[in-house]
Image 1 (cartoon, rainbow, N blue to C red):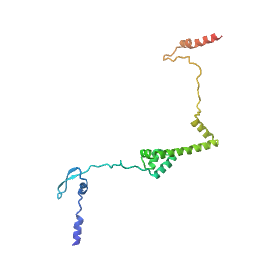
Image 2: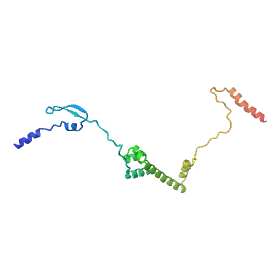
Image 3: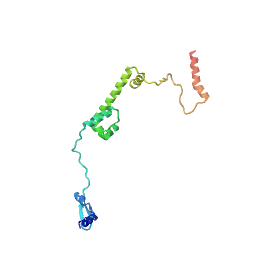
Image 4: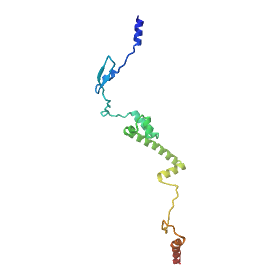
Length: 179
């Protein structure tokens, strides 16, 4: 007998109408048709609300401060440091900007010390690099133009006679005056 009762209850499945969830948010009224024993009921549904974070203050995490400084000292970009510390780039700049700047300064100090040690040891490549980057030296050839330009630039080309008359005749006159 008891086995028959168990089998009957196993065949009957629970019907979830979702009424419990709907009744929790009573603000917007909607007409909902429910199964026949429950008929029709009016239910109020709240619109979604955002949390108000205005009264909360962000506190720097000492572990994140150390990680930002350490990673910046290794020369990583802001976006790479932000990803490694699980921050957005804006949060990194806003909350940990000083730590990032301190790490970058530490990296530059290490590089500068290494370069100076190499330069003091007489490494010619490092000396050339420092001369070019810090002193403005260059290997480019400097072309200096000396003298005056006697030609007038024109859109119309000169014929041979005009050229000789304009430029070569003046030079021969100048030479004749000197004699």
